[in-house]
Length: 386
Ligand code: MN3
Image (cartoon, rainbow, N blue to C red; front, side):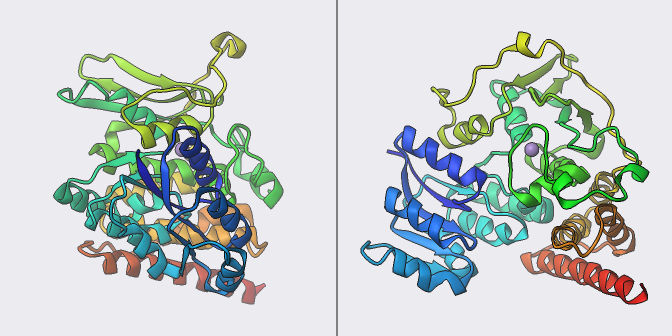
């Protein structure tokens, strides 16, 4: 029986991973959530893990109360996530937490020799260099859960000796495809949260609307598949049926397709290399009839441009743009800034951060901290002048 742990178990990826675990008999040894004590307790009652972590310490008492009849250890905070990441006899740890908070647990699991199913793209964006190096040293495998990266990974099966010439990273374009900056000046939180194809958490949905998500995925792909920026072509594909593609030396392009449902990449990462029954709809190409492919609009979507610029410069820049975005998205969701301000702030941090080499996790956390501080100062400064 395969064993797993899940960081971010109450989110969209985490809950679907638990459905996969139930269907295919994977033993769940630990669960972690940010602050939803009630949802976490329900999952724990059903899957009976050895340990649960509630990141937000103020919810610990509530969780303990809910689980009082069960023999389950309750831990909290980053120490709790690290404790789960260093558990022994775990085949795979699914990391599906939101944001930079996922970096340290990923590194801890690698140190422990535990394979990772990675749905936390910020881990590779901010710490790609370090994470990939350490995983290679420890012989730890990182299985991508992001649908595009899973697609690329799937296209590469049976091609280990063949060089990737280029990858085609598909993008749905988000809810604002075809809009200009003028159209987007007054976008509301509700509009930004209405994604046409995928149902996801708030942060990633806003990232999809700004195309920051595609920028983060661009960086993630570079690290996972050892690519240079010029080897990645972003193509807007509104239907989200072709999840990405790989072009080889002979100009043959292999793509992976399926309905837009995260169950497929989650299950593939957890049960690799098996392909067995999955609870998703069958793809009917004739129902779609037409699949479209277009160029992205780099002028309107500042975040996408900022990410590509950041990873081309390298060093601390990817961590900085990621940190700036996390701070800006939180400010947008709480109504403190407008939609286009997210891109302005991310681009401003990208342009004003001095490049430094990254040699430790502290360097990454420092780049993240400085970028957030810069964004907060800008937001507060602008409010004062109004
Ligand atoms: Mn994706």
